[in-house]
Image (cartoon, rainbow over all chains, first blue to last red; front, side):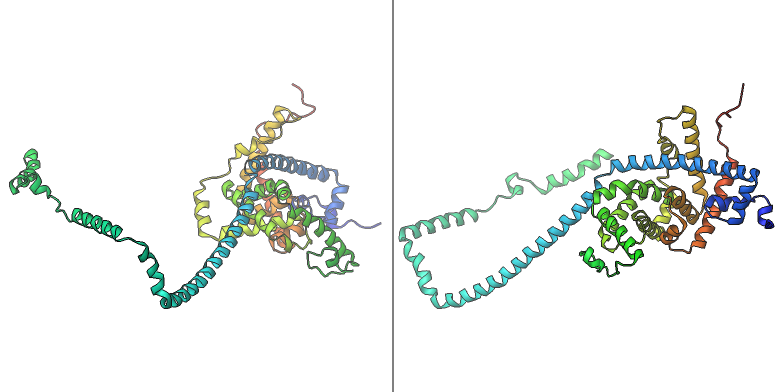
Length: 182
Length: 218
């Protein structure tokens, strides 16, 4: 027959109970619990008290969290999709920018090329539209431009002269609020 | 045969002949399927993460943000999941890192002091399941929820986190140690202290309406 150890002989302490409730398996303590009905009942009562409290807490908090989650259930996919859209937009913007820059470079190159060629062929190119305008048309355009010019150059009547405002009027207008305040 | 042949999209080079590696691969394979479907990921884990973060930080608004960030981070980093723990443990680890990051910021410290949006215990307690229980049992359950919620607020951050991971998330001690990045013995110490505090405070504040004893007569 094996002699019971000191741990198996003494009753459970608070620390032992805490360890057992933590889920730790302490062979000496468990052997005592198996042999001692009083300690077995104490452990069972403590376990039930903790478990029922934790169970109620877990049920309520999980239900609460699920209810809260349901109200925001679409946010994450939208954020994820939003991220993808943003990334797609960024790529399309980058592509458009690249195309624009490339087109600009080639366009500039083309313009310089056209300028060079235009300098050599400037006279025939300008001669074509000038030949199509009649002298009458030129005379009408000149008359219209003169009329516009004379209209624009008409002197604008000054409000001071138009309404015959004098220095006295302006002085009186400035003094009126002071008289009211007195 | 290499695992990369089984999972061509993921570069794993463990020999499948090892039982540990095979188990890990099986877990990883099913977990990757789970992680690939973001709707299922949100449906399955968001509530648990939201609850855990809310009771860890004590701030429902911050918890919503962190829960969102956690799932988004997990989805974006799903290729890095090694399969050596469950998806729940992995997500909890990500959530813990996010909580730590927030707690380091001055902004969080300010808001924690302000406590503008603290947990409404009575609101949470009203979510007790009503099916198959008497009104008296529901009342007791509400009181239990309120008491444990208030007790959790008195615990230190580590004690509260370990307690929640053990009893709400139902992780075992090695899993908690991995998620919290601390030795198992440290986890045991925090859990021991947390249970001692919870037991002491539960004993100090007995419920107002005790259920009638089975043999009690009037």
